[in-house]
Image (tube, rainbow, N blue to C red; front, side, top):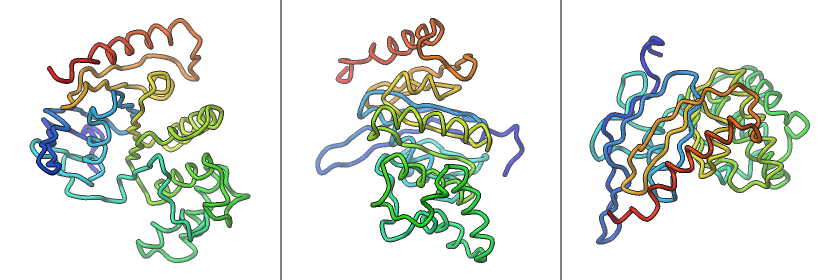
Length: 259
């Protein structure tokens, strides 16, 4: 880890071009973003604006076509346990129990059985799944599966958690509960979180900075620091004033994609 004066993530002039059969897709164009350790960043924008592409570049799954993606000042060359990804579809191993899913990363790194057990116990408790430690993914609700996915990333010693619409497939009540739990985990662990969402309300509820992206080729339209006390009240005048500003920024680009 570098000193705390260095941003944990720097995106410097990153563009990403994909070839899809005979089509050239400009997914990202000249994106710049700096993220400090311990921040909770939400990326919002319309479908196809490059949010997930930017997240995958931070994870090391994709490389920029041009520009630089750095972690602690060093190029992100590929996936690494320090950067954990949480997907909307959970991506759990169906043949492994909750305990073994969470312990998979530490065990793969060659840690001893007692140490793996200690790590797993810690994160099972953190996400409130001690009673389901021996259950399998097919026996869990969607919300429980997502908690396992989060615990698995944390148990793998991640410093940065990248979340691609992780609550998008959940019902409203489960989504609200997991939003609260994620904030509690973030505040307790001092992790850095980058969270992709379509929902302006979710972004304001969770983030201390909301980054608005334009339709493809994705550019960062604005980077908005939120100075709202926590816990946040979605019905408050202050919350709704921010919602109006961000919604205006988000929707002002609709219909301009071809420009």
